[in-house]
Amino acid sequence: MGERSDAMFKTTGSKWLLPVSEFLGFPIDQVNFIACQLFGLAVAFLFRLYLKPSHFNPLVRHMVATVLGTAFVVFCFGWYSAHILATVVVNYLIILKADINHVHRYSMVTAMGSLTVCHVSRVIIFNYGVPSTDFSGPLMMVTQKITTLAFQLHDGMCKKSEQLSSEQKLTAINERPSLLEYLSYNLNFLSILVGPCSNYNDYKDFIEGSHISRRLKQHSGSSNGHNSYDKTPDLSPLNAVCRKLLVCCGCMLLFLIVTRSLPITYNVDPDFINNADFLTRLTYAFFSIQAARPKFYFAWTLADAVNNAAGYGFLGIDENGKPSWDLVSNLNIVGIETATSFKTFIDNWNIRTGVWLKTVCYDRAPKHQLALTFILSALWHGVYPGYYFTFLTAIPITMAARAIRKSVRHHFLNSKSLKLGYDIVTWAATQLAICYTVMPFLLLSLDRTLIYYRSMFFHVHILSILAAFTLHGKHKPKSASSVSTKSPPPISSSSSPDLCQSVPCNNNDKKA
Figure 1 (cartoon, helix red, strand yellow):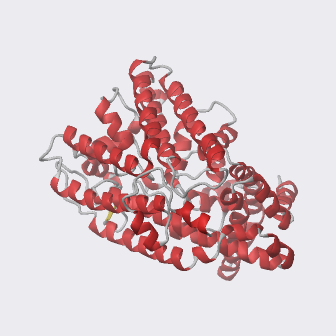
Figure 2 (cartoon, rainbow, N blue to C red; figure 1 turned 120 degrees about the vertical axis):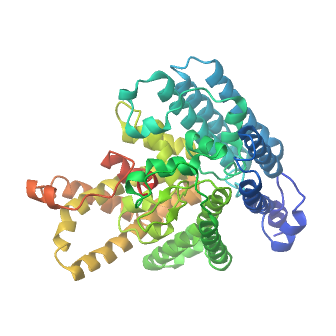
């Protein structure tokens, strides 16, 4: 117990808050992370109120955002932060000196190579005992930003307008950013620790003060009469920030009360596996996975609130005529918890990473888009075997879910009671399938993953494969009349149904 306690209070970053860590019983790396995010939240309000674009040059705002972000990573990760800073500087040299026709490829290889080295070192150094917040997290966010900017720069400087999609035209970058702009985009205090990744043009507009007015003009056709904006309106994000902070408080309470009492590793405890029956083990797995979500909800919602507090993240005017501040939201908790399909769950989880995968991989690959997107996603997450088990398991489940929906769902749409029953059954099936799929993602190691799947008799693998093969090609054919009369599907940023079945797609840009 003494060794475990000592390990909790070891960190590569600052030890100033060690007394707080010891008092609360939280690992020092978690305390440093939360302290930086809460400090960032306070600074974000000051950034919006006292460092307004109308009073300060964008260079000043860029500089303040960069210095604070750099201070955060040094405080949290000590000398490991040099790896993050070096990756950003090297990739700036690439976009500055490399052939612009190949800059996106060079940036992808360099950033992903650096990240992979980091992931391999985690396995060697920590041997699966990974601290909750190590420097790989910010490096993963920086990798998304570096590659996003490189591809959008290639779009703006190498491609003709007719070669770009409507989304690519909006995000294309027509000139190389300055060093300060590049550093600010990658290292700003709003998103350096946990993201999310956003488009460079949106971030630059925010720094320069045209973020809100430009978003309103883009959505003026569907913004309830808001058809022209000659100057930036003074829209306050206070309500959105308060609402998201309340969600954070609820998630923290759930973490303290529920999450810590349902450890994931108990799923592979030998005594539990040998003495508990299958239904008991299945029930515990379900609740332990549910209990693991609040920490992700907390981190992503707090990051969203920090961005909003600074005045960043305005999406547009919603259907009720109210401002929406969900441009950089990384999750939809209601959508996740009420998901009745595998696709719906994934569409609402880690949304901005799904946008990144679509932007830099799926939309660019000439063929095998789905496979390449899965591979990139797995490499980005790390080299732990559990990650790859999760992504490989998702493939047959995705195929089965698609086949079942096409073959069965239409039989339950003629009655409200049947539809309700169908939704309840599919909700339960979806949550259990997600539980089964993501368990290796949290267990990490190969031996623990195999122990868990053996204890579950590989039942989801078997049922998914059987369903996919049995129902393949047997779904109800679409008639011309049914196609013309059915309701349109939800707007998605992806034009491909295959991608949305497996990679989270962001719907935010088209909601307003």
